[in-house]
Image (cartoon, rainbow, N blue to C red; front, side, top):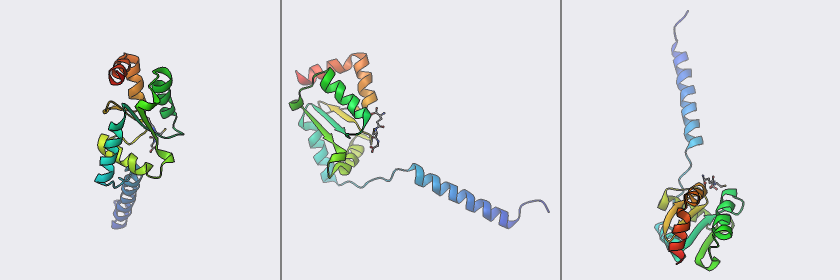
Length: 141
Ligand SMILES: N[C@@H](CCC(=O)N[C@@H](CS)C(=O)NCC(=O)O)C(=O)O
């Protein structure tokens, strides 16, 4: 007795294999295929208005960002484009295109004057540092 048998090694190999596959499935977010036409269309949407926000209506981070932009900083509605991706038929495609363009998959995904700002935490950081004020003043001047 003692030592490892071939069966022990086989069992170990199977357990490690299953663990590896499970980890791969659980941690990799499947990359959605997105057409270049959609990417181009989303780039066009981003550039259409001074402020662009891709959001989801149930997302608290999005609500915080929209409050900052529209309630605190009074960004005019006609100078902005807010997309509620969860209420759009092609919302998933737009989100996938944004991920390809910016490397950011989460919402809110915010642009000011065509410049990628990031998510809500990035927006709040800019607000705290006083830079958001400058950015919006320049964009809306
Ligand atoms: N740190 C991010 C957090 C944003 C976040 O977690 N958003 C969630 C929705 S509330 C999200 O995008 N989840 C993935 C998805 O909806 O596809 C920020 O400040 O913007």
